[in-house]
Amino acid sequence: MAMAWFTSTTTITTFILFFLLLYSSSILVECTQGLISSEPTGDVDLLEFPLNLEYLEAEFFLWGALGHGLDQVAPQLTQGGPPPFGARKANLDPLTRDVILQFAYQEVGHLRAIKEAVTGFPRPLLNLSAASFANVINHAFGKPLVPPFDPYANSINYLIASYMVPYIGLTGYVGANPKLQAETSKRLVAGLLAVESGQDAVIRGLLYQRALSRVKPYGVSVAEFTNKISELRNKLGKGGVKDEGLIVPLVEGAEGKVSGNILAGDQNSIAYDRTPEEILRIVYGSGDECVPGGFYPKGADGKIARSLLKRN
Image (tube, rainbow, N blue to C red; front, side):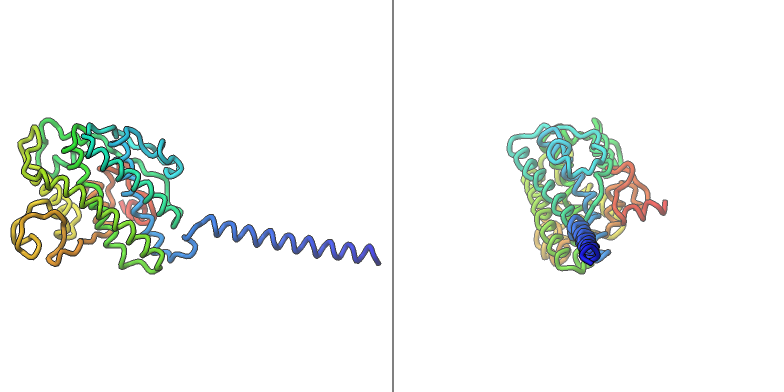
């Protein structure tokens, strides 16, 4: 009788321990998935998409300021993705380097914040070569510049190249925010948008100080470079006017009273929005969200971008 009682007790204890182990394992899985398990599916897709741009910004700014990128600064954030090619340290004056270095570490934080909310994906292959930026500039001017534009050559060139970067992400966050459902998602995107907007404002401010200066050796003003780049992005995005250079016709300035345009905005000075499709058309340089190229030779990653690539 005692032996039967002991066997029965042992069986019950074993069952309870097995149940507790199973339950603990399920809790552990949920915890390691971060917030993704509690976020609506649509939110997850919209939160992971900006990782494509955050990777681009982080690598471009880190390489420009330090001469190396995420593989040395925060290798765990790359998730084993391929290193960018063509990036190198830029020839920057002390002030510009200081600003860009701050941007670089801010982008590292952005990557971490998004990956704490969603699983994300490995760093996509990025083309950060001088030729990649030169292609954008040639497209913007409708002809090859001679010599080819080199973003790493000096501070002015690097700031012009930087003009291409945070603003695209800014418009993407503006477009994503009203589509999000969870409060945690909205809070994250609002925080990211605030800093991206600040970066864009600083870049535009530094360029605005030199708006009428001629970019050597092309004899074209800084303002004209920004206008051409903005016109190209409007053309590629196919979403109407959502981009403006540093100097605009008076009628397009704030309240129709100024031509200086240190911050871009609509008729009420409200930030423009862009969809993921518009963003991909621009960063691919193809005007087609299904045809990769430009800064993303093999295309962007995440559910939204991958679903579009499958259509090609």
